[in-house]
Image 1 (cartoon, rainbow, N blue to C red):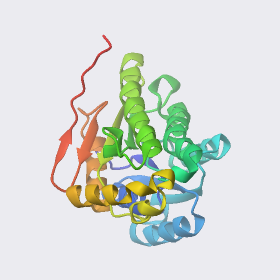
Image 2 (image 1 turned 180 degrees about the vertical axis):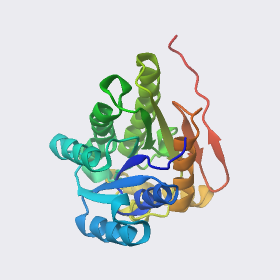
Image 3 (image 1 turned 30 degrees about the vertical axis):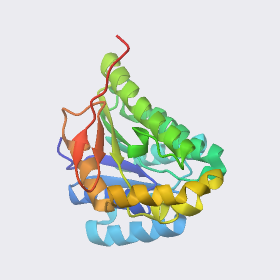
Length: 258
């Protein structure tokens, strides 16, 4: 899949992994709508990218993916400005065991909401062009992060939703592939503040530090390169791509439902 002329939407685009995803999509010829609640960082990044790639290549839209109204409006605006949507990167996420309901709302419900609303623009059965959705999950979506049970649950949910949506799209003829990238610890603001966000599991801080030392930390660009692979390789659908500083591999799942 060539990205020349393709239209991408990235949630949580202003900083960290989302920023790196936005940049790699632009570098490969896509037009990108940046969605984020952080207006200051989002507008600043968008202005810098416009200078580098041209005014017509990027767009910033203030959007809280917890809001059906804001998300719907942002996707509608993207489609109007760029003429459709081909790629959705559900990247916005938080880690905070203190505010576990908000964690579920953003990390899992936000992914589902954005996906369903994007289907209205992308689904071939509705006149869309099809395309690909990539969800930012985590290695904690495949195994437990003991100090962060709710974060773990949301990312397991993202992986499950990804696989089921991919199967549903294939069976229904939507023309949309759905994949997940599952990085280990990544050098972001979320990671830098993790030990302050453990809530009732703060006593497991040392164990969390031990896991970081064991796995090491990825750069945001390494995660963005995985996104590019999942977007451009048209054979990838329903995949969970795990990436750590030591390795990159596609997960093999046991399908118990036949």
